[in-house]
Image 1 (tube, rainbow, N blue to C red):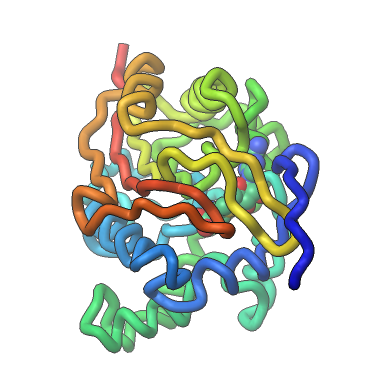
Image 2 (tube, protein in one colour):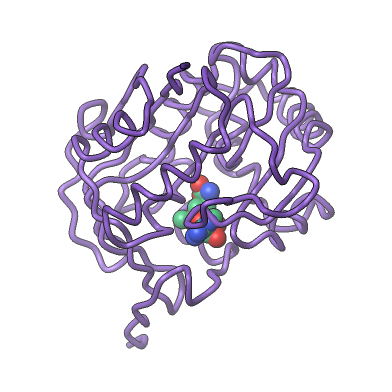
Length: 268
Ligand SMILES: C[S@@+](CC[C@H](N)C(=O)[O-])C[C@H]1O[C@@H](n2cnc3c(N)ncnc32)[C@H](O)[C@@H]1O
């Protein structure tokens, strides 16, 4: 029998992206307990970005074209990648065989086989295109008032931000979550768009020997917090409405639902 995972938080322990990917994203269906939630995210992001879901793993998208959400994937030509840990992002950029944190080749390949979003010939092209657009990889801590504090992007306000499965794991209480929302909002220009991927009603998720605590946030609380921060929610798709009810209680994670939200920071 394997040892019981150690309960911790992202503040205390770095997680291992290789174990994370092999656990949750080994195929387009995701982990068997998660019942195609990866496909739900890809489809949801595909709708949000219209022509591409390549930004699945990108936290912050900087776009100098003032693009609308439907134009963001094509329009964004300067992208900044951020995370609390940046080593895996740097490795992935340097080494094609490195951690495939940006492109889930297996997942994309499966989708192609099943007639999904990507034509086969475009996968490598998209990968190269995205690599060209990534200008910076910088550390960020969403729990801090100035989350991206390192040069060269300190003080920059972004045209669009995308964040995936980060906010709920960066904190534990709803108050802390709301503070992270405030911190992220300070990085987005008024009128800018946010594309947010997350899970609902989750208290933990497990990566290898560590069980990370998570903010247990419901759909209404999510909307409430973003609206109070001055965002207009343009769309909010959730897994249980779109696919089927998860109702899970697993050793891996206890999230009950997942969502893709598109919101706009209100001007003035
Ligand atoms: C569940 S993983 C999600 C990884 C990836 N974005 C995805 O969608 O699969 C959570 C990520 O949040 C990052 N993270 C945790 N706390 C953070 C913080 N305070 N600020 C920024 N990133 C944080 C972790 O380093 C990790 O990469």
